[in-house]
Image 1 (spheres, helix red, strand yellow):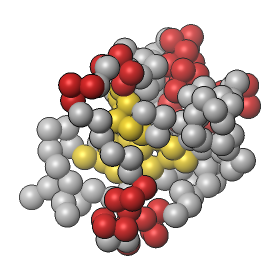
Image 2: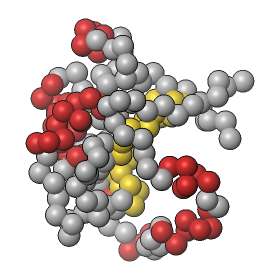
Image 3: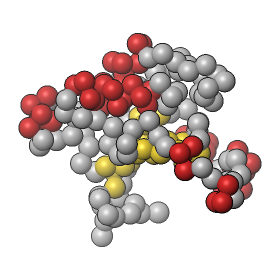
Length: 162
């Protein structure tokens, strides 16, 4: 008995992710051509896959970044983490934390440590001031529609239902 995990997104603040239903509905075989081949492990330089934060790394360099919760209680540290991610051209955040809430969390809640800081609002606030990478530095063009956020809560150390 796990509760069925349900995706949620910030309504009104962020646009709906485009293409999500098309991608989820396609058989895996049709997507395989979009994924670059992995290099042989003896040819991999681990530093190439380091992400912008101490707790992040590239799964597919320049395309898919994974990492720990990208927020912090301290405003300066929080903004530095988010800037380092946004300046790489990252425009979609996927949160798997069941304890994350983006509505109804006050500053007092996350300062006291009773709830996680809803970092996506800070990312939206920072977006206009981000120095966007040139297309030669990153594959993502400057977003014209803001950021995308998908919340698919999974209880820590658990899995989601199929």
